[in-house]
Length: 285
Image 1 (cartoon, rainbow, N blue to C red):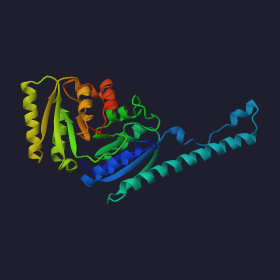
Image 2: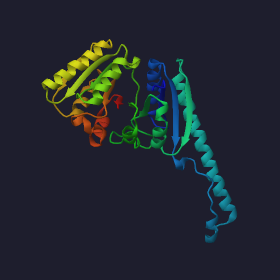
Image 3: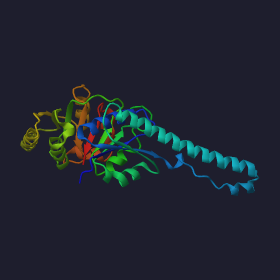
Image 4: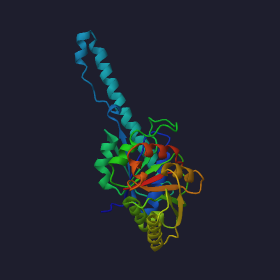
């Protein structure tokens, strides 16, 4: 069941603006509306605390009252900050585009929020790194892999800077999820008119040749004249190398496969690939 809705997750990180621009691009091509979520951690919205127990330690009642008021002020400021983030994000998405945007401010665990709300959307957009991760290459958003593992929707991982997408690289291993990715591309208006290249990393076999031929036939039926590339080597290294040449603005790959790409979702490969990949990544389930 489709919802014609894109779920976009924004925070105060340097990646939030890129998330908004990519969300506008995706929603515009699909004619979807956007649901913007900013999820505050539980510590970002502290309730008024009961500090009466501190009286035993000699604290004055006036000080206790001031501390409680300070906590309440912090909670109010956190909510105002969250709403400001959402309003700024909405302004970026709607600028020059007729896109319906709804905003949602939530408190709690980000991954729990996503898994609870993902059925209301057809795709999820998140930045590669969150506001707590910094900009160093070795740091990835702490929630990113958890969301990719938990979500049953396609997850679009935005890099730091938005660049108009004209050419798509598809990581292909012949597995079920990569075949689903091919079918999705062939049918989705999001990819209409874009250049598509399939890349297989590993040893060329008759089975892989047939899978690639079938995949290009599916794409051709959808109006794509897809190219194919076969490169020997580890998938994450091959993909990082190809995406670094600037010829492709988006990498699409399935979450599971029957080759080493299968480990993409498990840990080390996903971390290494996302660290080194210079373009956004769309992970299909």
